[in-house]
Amino acid sequence: MKYETKVTGIGGMVQELAEDGNLIILFNDDIKDTDLKDISVSHEIGKLKEDIVVGDVLTIGNKKFEVTSVGNVALKTLKDLGHCTIKFDGDTKTNLPGEIHVRGLVPEVNIGDIISFK
View 1 (tube, rainbow, N blue to C red):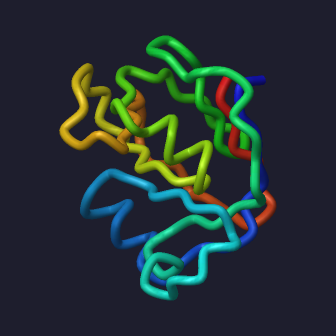
View 2: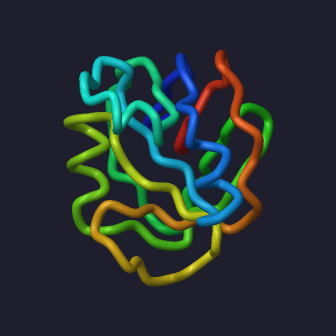
């Protein structure tokens, strides 16, 4: 397991971002900024044990997604803040440096779900 954490909160705008932008934004649940909490799936602080690379598998709850690209700062922000934007579009190039792209449709995320990369 390269990274694993448990969902502790779901911001009020998460559903809208999932529907309109095909994305989920992750942040550690110790983030203080209420605007960021509102747009994010909050989770326990996890430890990035190994770099996430193309071909790895993201699991959210019981749904699996293949990683298709990783932005050049996504691993640093995931390690430092538990933050990245997961885009569910299968793109092989990232538009923004903090994005991780995966193949599949945005899943429903629930409090208590495990999010992992392996």
